[in-house]
Image (cartoon, rainbow over all chains, first blue to last red):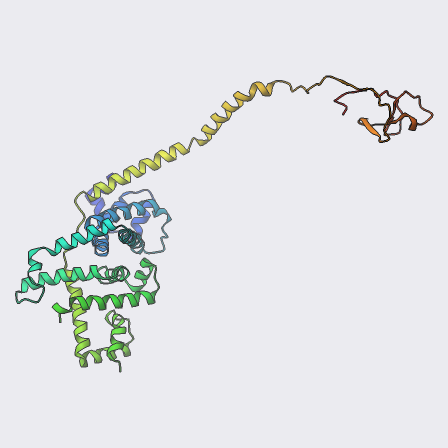
Length: 208
Length: 178
């Protein structure tokens, strides 16, 4: 039943569901309408995937973690405090899973080695390998800048990166970030400031 | 008036427009006068613009199918556990019935008190001075201490503890009486 609900729903009903806000979808799901959950998946899957991917740096694993996030939402939605924001709750679950993933990865040398190897292999791509410095070729410069910006995010310390991605890419408020990461506002401010500072230092050679 | 350190310390609040109007103006003035901080602001803004233009990763085409399958399996497990949880009372009742059936023969028989064969003993040659309880309600004392008005038997005389005198030859003491 739930599988069918996640996979398909008639078009007019889908449109009606799309018009509902998150809390209404949650209420519908709790009332027994599984399509409410299907719409929540549709709404959050890409956002969460990008968030987890930017946090962990591993696309395939990010997809597994997003699946796990939805499984947990499905199981525990009846315990969700509906006076709170659903998006904050689901991001908190995803953030915790990403955090655990990074923690486990740091404890597992094999995974760490694979991650390093992956990065190293990516570095072997000829275009980026040709020259690390500025070149007048604008297309190359843009591509290099994108690569550098992605790397800069990956290089941020874990707890700085989560705050940075939530603010800059997901547009969360400081209060929401504090709730998602379980930090107080002061910590969020200082981590964000340091993350921006580190980020700027890495990409400064190409922008300025 | 703010300096570069203040600017960098509170840059995030400035960028996210969390400063009050007065501080915000001070930051703007500092930006106009300080090339280094202006460059810093340009780098952060430009970097984040680039970041936002990065192509988004999208879920693989079978994402929803895989999720749906996992949820279905989970539902099945939950349903089976809930259906197997419903007749718990039935299982307990069946177990109780089997237990009762096994114990029924033992429970049906009338419990008989264990009877031991009587034990015989001779009266002591030197009766002790310590009274001995022969049976509930009777006190045995050596005959020499028995009251004179009662009929006596050799050996012990038994007296009702309630005051009525009874005579008994305590040569036959059953285990049960003990």
